[in-house]
Image 1: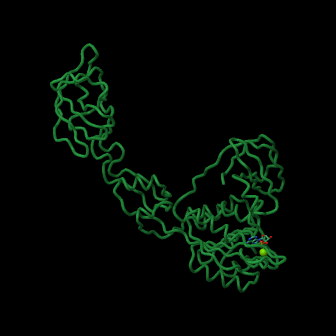
Image 2: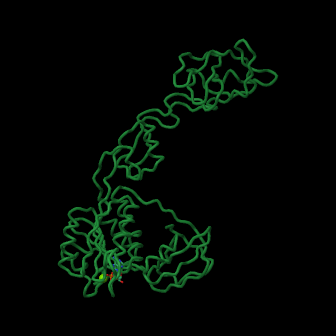
Image 3: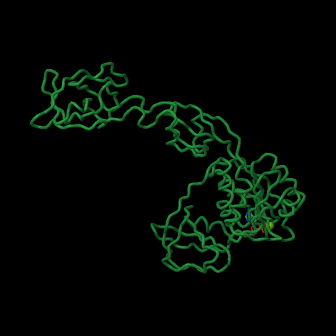
Length: 400
Ligand code: AMP
Ligand code: MG
């Protein structure tokens, strides 16, 4: 029944089965778009800047006019006018002329370089002396140097950050096409679970996963739809799954994923749809199920909150990104282990660490208590074939 496969094979299965699913597209106001995923490439339809612009306070010149000038033989140019901020100069610069332009102002047609005011001497009666040659394009930005009509600015799938919002505003956009936020159902199941806020009777424990998974979903840009705790009763779980599935893009069920008598999820997924993966060779996280009902992903996460936390990162997060045509940017850091870590399980193993500079101190966690994850700021994976790691060994840390 349990056919354990590697984490990378499980990921590949998700990619194969759900890699082409995409969320519907919406048009929303730019002010609401931070954190959302672009649904189309953003392409410029104008020149930015729209005119040749100075980057200094100084004089616009024709660079040829300054060829060969020096302290002893300066080039003398006649000032033909000043460029007003926010307007286009109408005068076309002729050989022998210069034109005052402030920082950010428009160069007059005909000019091809700027000379900083500090390097120009006012000889009086409109004559200005230049003592150093200047290269064409110096101290200015040409029209279209940043962007030209047709150039791609942001790709589809990009999760918009505040700088992107600024970029879109600079293009004059007030609305943007994004993917709908994924709606994800969460069902916690187990006879021992009680909601937070209710007195704990002997033998009971508090439901951690509903809250933790909601927070993880929010952090990933998804919307959580929570349900009341379901006891280990097949009919009740079936009903809740069917109800939940009708309104979500993905369904997460935590607990009851193993092969015990009270573990109902495998049987129900088999009955309502199809099991794709049951069992992943990773510690913690072995009793994980990947299934499909009516072409929707249903992921059975282990009830152990630490395992559910890591399986969310390893499987659910990439799936959420892929629904918006996106990929998570990997943010790993290389660090050295402060002490040896044993491991000989024939499965990959997740090790929590406290990362300080380039030193990673392993954080003990064998109890499945989520507070041990709170004590860590990173984790790494020991590969399946490795029998532990020595002190000082280099590991690739994922930040938490
Ligand atoms: P299960 O996956 O149902 O076999 O549960 C594995 C372990 O996780 C058991 O110790 C459960 O009591 C615990 N557990 C299951 N669901 C939750 C939950 N929602 N919150 C906290 N602990 C849970
Ligand atoms: Mg259980």
